[in-house]
Amino acid sequence: MRKPLMIAACAVMLASLAACHQEGPAEKAGQSLDQAGQKVQDTLNPPQGPAQKAGRSVDRALGE
Image (cartoon, rainbow, N blue to C red; front, side, top):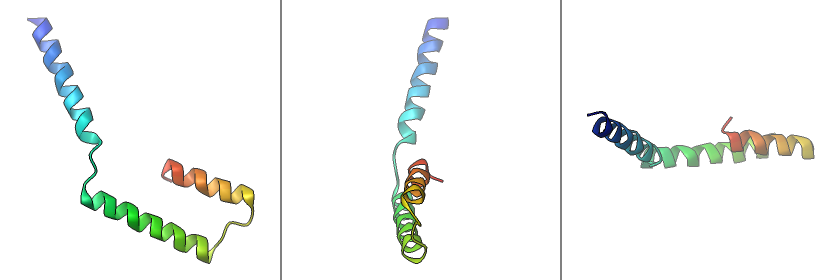
């Protein structure tokens, strides 16, 4: 009785993880808007040196 229950629980967890990685059109559009905003920020307020430029790259890579 426990073995089928464990197999079913694992299957549900794997299915939920697979569904998390799909991006919809709204998410893709949001990412495009974010990138455009970052380009505008770099144009209006450019990084003052290599350290600040690297910091911005790290922040963007981490999604902050």
